[in-house]
Amino acid sequence: QVQLVESGGGLVQAGGSLRLSCAASGRTFYIYAMGWFRQAPGKEREFVAAIKWTTSNTYYADSVKGRFTISRDNAENTVYLQMNSLKPEDTAVYYCAADRSIGLRTTPEAYDYWGQGTQVTVSS
Image (cartoon, rainbow, N blue to C red; front, side, top):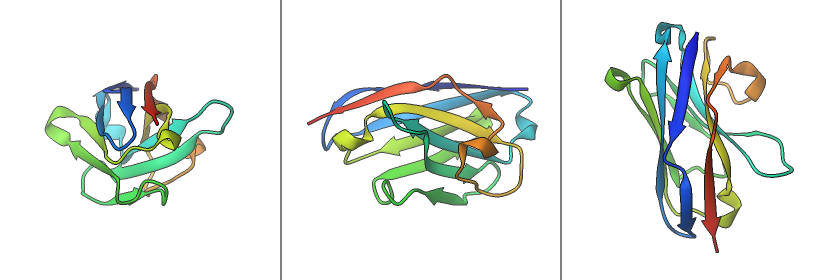
């Protein structure tokens, strides 16, 4: 099993920045890729970004491209999401997830392990 714990959420004004962290523990050798998803009230969970666990390959949703950056520190078993130029529509609970299968995938169903989520609120 893999355990994931997110941190770093909070309240920020539009145009501001936040950095989310996701610490992985347990059988991390299972992990092929890590992803960030978000879910706003009344909406489905949506893909934000993904990164391969052992390389620098990344993939982003169009809505965050150029504003968000996903990165990883394998020595610390941690994945980060740097969020800049935040907008009110970025407000959501952000989840990190781990995928055991090959590929950078964008659907929640493809991921095997999930964190508990961290709230990000962007005020206008």
